[in-house]
Amino acid sequence: MGLQDAIQTYHDLLTPQLALESQEHLDAQLRQQGLFFGSRPLCTVLRPRFLTYHQYRHLQTSIRPLLSAFDKSYRAALEEVAIREQFGLFPWEESLMDVHPGYPYATPVSRLDAFYMTGDETLRFTEYNAEVPAASAYNDVLSEVFYGLPITREFLHKYEIRSLPTRYRVMHALLDAFRHWAGRRAVPRLAILDWDDVPTYSEFRLFMNYFRSQGLECIICTPQEMEYRHGGLFVGDFHVNLIYKRILITELVERGGLEHPVVRAVRDGAVCMVNPFRCKLLYKKASLAVLSDERNSHLFSETERHAISTHIPWTRTVAERHTTFAGNKVDLIPFIVKYKDRMVLKPNDDYGGHGIVLGWLVDDQMWQTAVLHAMRSPHVVQEKVSIPREPYPSVVNGQLQIYDRMLDTAPFIFYGEYVDGCLTRLGTDPLLNVTAGGGSSVPTFVVDRR
Image (tube, rainbow, N blue to C red; front, side, top):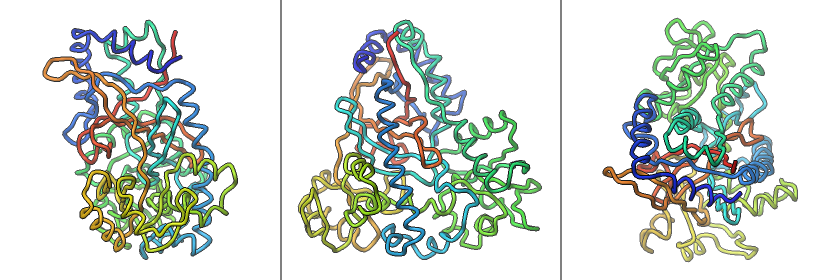
């Protein structure tokens, strides 16, 4: 089945009247379900992202050897100082690497961010969100909303679609980690932990309601509300023994210090936290540099090395050194200054597109300034990748419009082992990040002709 045929059929069915009816339904459901990122609606288009069964399977199978390589680099970093230094941990982060989480997974729940050119199946992974991957609940509920659109009713006469739900996978990953930590007889008492002013707070409510519907005790709380007393972590009278951590470790420590009740409770083994402190290793942008760098090729099998060269863009930690590019030896700093139009600079520890500099969008002076800053503060440099585009319909000022938007492919990863589900974000900005401003999320459906 051709993907473009499915997209064209969907757009052909979307008459102006049907588009208006579908938009009204979408707007009402977004409000009713709380599908907002801060004050902005989560979705602004009228078509889901489609993947064929073959394309989704290709995504799953391509990632497996990469996940194995990430795991090997993670375990090598825990054992070897020389490897761990490449990740660029701060001293306080180093001190938390000794805290065993009580379960065997570095990242029970994570997400890889990629660009997937489905035409020729080019798949390039640019970041590993190994700490607090968002949007799983958003994605599930948004999928349910799209099933109910009037245009979907028409499309289902010709095609079948399958959503890729992940809330239940998040729940099982939390419970698996908890049972490793506590044993099967313990009853989880779950807290979703983050600040109360973050734009993703509405997703916490979706998760809380889902967890409660599955029989779990669950609350949402902030770090300020938590107390560590009598060997337990409490929010008021609620004894928390499992944390679904949506707060960034850096923000928790910067605001509360290493003696914060949450940090102390995790360190003392008084609470199970997902994801653990050790996930910081893989969350660092340098995790892709560790895989890509020729210094570390001995860590990986031939299959893993092939997957890395195929799917990870050339990435290096910014420093004065010699390295290789396309098999040739280069002096790193002069090289990235010279070839700015092929390069991206990224802070080693940030999110939401903050601090990223796209070389082809700035002049020479701005790029040189950015490189100098990257030499003083931990950064990686990454080779530019191609960004795919697809047409998406939307209603603007009462009129149906269909125009191309850039899109990414962000599969959800469980236990650091396999893909289940996929986030798709659209935008007109190359950063393609909802946090950075603008953009839209759409549910991802596997599609096939009837």
